[in-house]
Image (cartoon, rainbow, N blue to C red; front, side):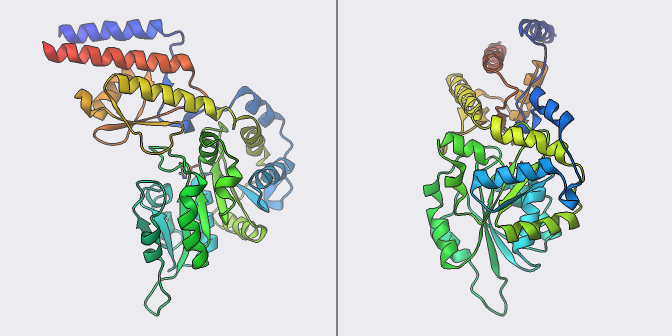
Length: 370
Ligand SMILES: *Cc1c(COP(=O)(O)O)cnc(C)c1O
């Protein structure tokens, strides 16, 4: 009883102490709201009918994206999921097989669309490192035969794993590129957060995608646009993709209002991702100093993956406590949580999060000692 009253007082105090009594939302980088500049360009965007290819702002965004990636053409879609599934539709026929990383978004978080929409069988391979083991990939490619599916696509993801955000450098893909070339199988890159990877690795996105036949990226994650994704590749691929998008119901009319903030996402929001990475690094160190275990596998970006079990907490209970202090995080499993940094999170927010967790742990230790 006493404990409950004390906790209530503590919560009130903390919310007052924080300069803005607002929620610090670390669940995902998808929660970012469009910047004032984005809202302005949306308001004044020059528009037309994009299904008739008449929207100048969409055309401008697509040309910009193709140029940034050094590919022939690009197409705006509603979502990363839609871009991924359009790509699968373009590269396969029902009954084909694709190779996927077993923890990839395309395999786990798209409502089984590969099979449900595209009739494709996915061949998942172990993916702890975020890339394929050469021997395993080689073995997974089907030999032509009357009883065999045909392996039509090798799928990659960078940054890899939505709860870990690992940046994979070009060298990590050399084996996969070799196997793909040996068998003449195209490579598809789900690059929802490819700019996070490129910024973390201090390289050009082209270095991470020039070997890919097609790439998709999300405008609405760290880049801060309200919605939208781009699918990028050869002109003939994009021509077919455009037709598939229409079939999927993804054709849009005055889509310039989406494309305008997308242009700002690509031109103004990429370099600042480094700030998110720095804050994520600060958060990792601070959490480790409190005895929380932090995922340290690979090259990190804006996502912090933590294991609270060394402190005696379960992830859900821990997250429930944080919500009461104005902090939202994502529960990944019994012991693991995710915190994603993004442009709505400031350095003072990270300090508040660390301070709050520090007090929560001190409090719970004191509680367990009684
Ligand atoms: C977010 C994400 C997607 C899907 O994007 P939506 O816009 O949410 O459909 C695809 N792949 C990866 C790796 C992602 O992180």
